[in-house]
Image (cartoon, rainbow, N blue to C red; front, side, top):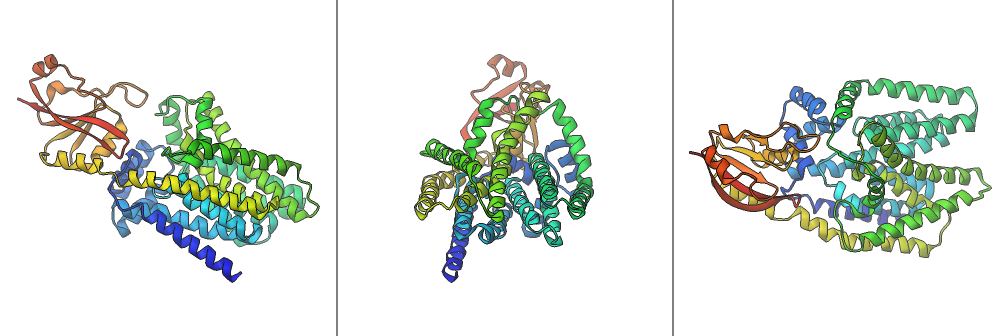
Length: 480
């Protein structure tokens, strides 16, 4: 046991070091820029920003605002804020898994949370995803704890807290909680068949509903807006399939990512079929098997629900939303080893696969986090940027968030009338009375005749990209 504790502590410290090694940069993609720009606002303006501009519940942005007020508004600071839930997941959930399913299962779980392609990507993103993973994963494990010992009130209270955290962070995390609550309530009633189980269901339900009331106005406003207009244009079966790649690929394709995706999902399906055929005699072993099966079913319900919503309402699902339940996938991967009593060679194979994934993917993530092209673009523009200059782009609204982050204190406009988000947002260059920095997704889309009619001179500044995400041609349009 002492040796196992040392291994566990060493692994946790190694995971923290590896993730922290990726945060010391100033490269952000559009969602991260949106978060940072929001943190610059006062709390009253931020609430409006969340309700009107954002399409997510308010907890993350409000928490990030408080964090940035205390520890500074910088990329490394906010990336640390994203690493914290990954550490909590490893410490809290990893120890629960150790207690219930054994040391080896906890090691598999911790390595997947901290060293998988999706983990290393989302753990350091200035977005909601590492927090959703913590809330939903902990909620699933606490549901199992309540099922095992329904009379312990601290477990029920902690379950309610983490469930509300999930529901107040992402709407697909809210959906995951609805499924988790349904599974827990049904299991309690079937197993105990007494008044206490009914009381537990009522207590948890009512307390959770009361706790969610502050988020309800945001939900109603954002759902109404998203029903009419949302940036996702289409959801197909390939979208659903691609979300199954994301845990083993993250946001960056790396060597052999297809092979690792296939390996793990073939293994998962094989394990699931074996769990269905398991005939355990002891009640405790049966309950562990049922829990693993419910975890796997939840992994299917989220993308299927996303597809159904998208076809019945409007497109409302993309592959990264699956990350809300990726922690449940890691639970399934980890505890199945214990339940099926697989031998040490299978354990070594799984650990080796995770390590090889890490070896291939870490350099890709490191290169993206520390790429220098973003800085080169910022330096190039700042060389001749004037206080009254404005920024226009023909890429998308999200690119304006990037421009606002890297060049604060100016005005930002869109020149794009294509797509759901961008109707009626063509910029009127004919009335331009100050220098405009024009960021184009390709070569200049203004003709020589138009420049002459609008009395504008055009200077090509150069090319570049922001965070290997927006590749652009940069022009200066100067009125004369």
